[in-house]
Image (cartoon, rainbow, N blue to C red; front, side, top):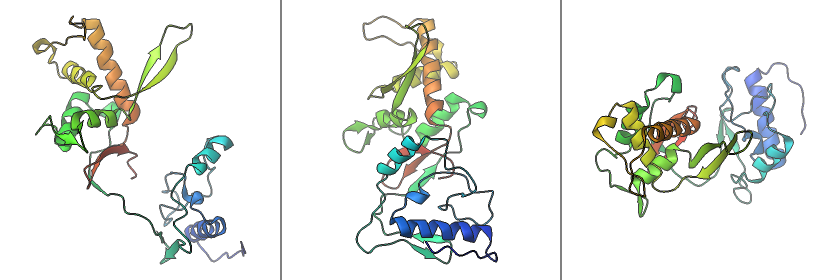
Length: 241
């Protein structure tokens, strides 16, 4: 890649130049795939890898699998990324969406779950219209809670000698457990009751288990920021987005 030492360059420029050389050599954006904090090197662009760190704690197999499924390249014949003003990476691509609203970072140790649920429902308009639809025939409430779960529900299987964590895909209607969690956290239980599919009432022990499972699944997926987009989608991601 025609590397020539130039000790007049600062660290940020060296890192950026190295990233561009690899992108052009590979004809791919694989070099910038890994998400990481960049604050330790002043002036380094957000897209440039922090070359003084190891790539990640992932195995070689996991890294290869991530690269194999990385679909941001190629953009088309003759279309190569360009470096603008030695800082910004310009890439031909398809506009997808943009974030228009975010919550504050959600930190489990500092956040009241019942209050947070109300704030999130307000952000996405569920308080105004609990029957609002989301991108077709799906209820917004269902899409909202599936997003809050990260679309996965985990539980602990204690039927074996050693406990085992299992994951299940979230489905429409799983948000009902958050109604219970909110009621528990907001001391509203005495004014409400929940009925099982077989017509019997939930016991106090069952309500406590459901509320704790909802809380754990929520924090499993959402120790970051929750956002909405210009096209009306909802999601969650690391605060650095």
